[in-house]
Length: 88
Length: 189
Image (cartoon, rainbow over all chains, first blue to last red; front, side, top):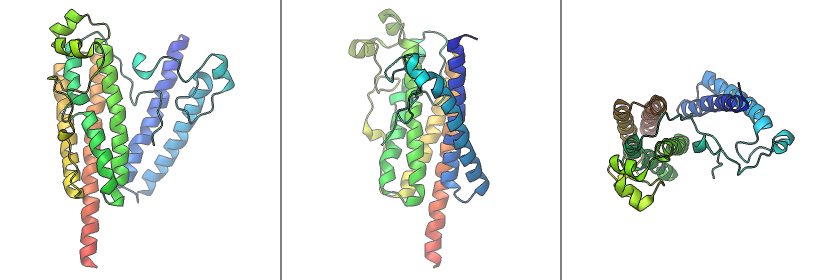
């Protein structure tokens, strides 16, 4: 697996984990008293934040809510660097 | 406010340059039942609906903007390497002379986007029924697009989007029930 593939696979994991949050957020919007769903939603946010930290530590922030890691800056990460999502 | 995330909601992989398919996809980009119409419709309705359904309109509208970005990615990738001749053969000659290789909010027939596609009635039940219809029309459009497309990467993304419209329709139907329950409770007490 080359470096690009590794990055792409880890990004897919972030997308996967974030999607679970999107889906459970909509569900809990209309099921505010479903305790099991609320629990899953909290767990999903925890999981998504862990996967994101893993990705961002190596490849740099996906949004400006995260602090750029030393490693990301060393490899030349910049907010304006390519690829943008439609350029992949 | 919103924060930009440098990633798509769902990965979009395009197999080959195909400007004709890109033109069909514009129906969901800038068409009457497309993602722009959906995002703008819900984002505008949310200010005056009962508190219990503000969350669902805000969150679905936000997701629609991420769908819009997926559509843009597909259209961009399907047309970026096309020659003017290829664009013309695909029915995008008029688009090319006006917009070059750039994207534009228009439908598959080249009709530009207009806010007359959407409504805001100040009546939550009327608004939510429009929203349910919008999701069902978008779902149907995705089905026709899948039927006409033979690009496996594009079809994978389109199937994801079709399923999301189902979920959104369901959440809006539940929202109607929540409002009806609230109304009936007020009548009893």
